[in-house]
Image (cartoon, rainbow, N blue to C red; front, side, top):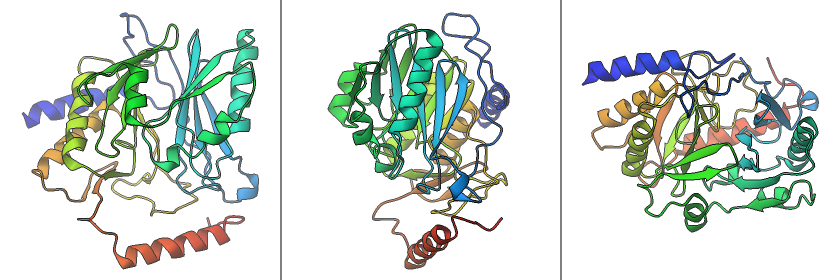
Length: 337
């Protein structure tokens, strides 16, 4: 069995190696998935925060965009994702505190309309889960009043999520949303958060895993639910092309097994954002190896990190975070390189 897992990891890793220019081999109807490009490295938050924009916008292709909040606004540095279909657009998450997302979002949608020769498109705003570093921008997005982009915001709540995606039996059912020529499959993945979902974009063959899988610390609230959700993503993607697995953060360095400490603003040598489906299999293997007993486990590109009353943050860890946040905020205008 382990030999089969290793072979699956190898084959899936080969699918995800092209981070600079990725094209899936097979699309949703048997043809080529939409080609797209990911940056080799994201613009770091510094060394001089005066020079860094609040959001970095990257065009994967002309109908899909990645936006990253600067660490100069919040050390969380979350990613959000913007999809365009023929009938509707969808924004996945709204960022963390101090993000000031509205001007950048409005500019990207307006530019897309100009590029397409259109006058308007409806925008649905949804979330990977309910934590504040992915929902803090909700109010300012809702405050955008432009008839060219009427906005419907769906709160990160269980009943609203089930209704939007047509999920009757949570978390077993797979939901969907159709943007017009662009179907997104929705996989419930509680464990990190009770209303967590993963999104599979059939057009690009990209799997979006929220905070449940990314290069960094995978904080687990409910270990059993998290493992079941990981297995659910593996089953769903079996036999499907997966060009990339994209999560919401980067906390890992380019050095295997080494992450940036919590609260780090400036990450000039960070890991690439994209992982492969093989990372899902590696995560599952790591979870299984713990035999149902949650514990921290460092793997090459991420760390299994249970949280909760059984795993309290030590006084030393809290003190180190407070000091790090103080020092880095003070140095943000000219950070050590």
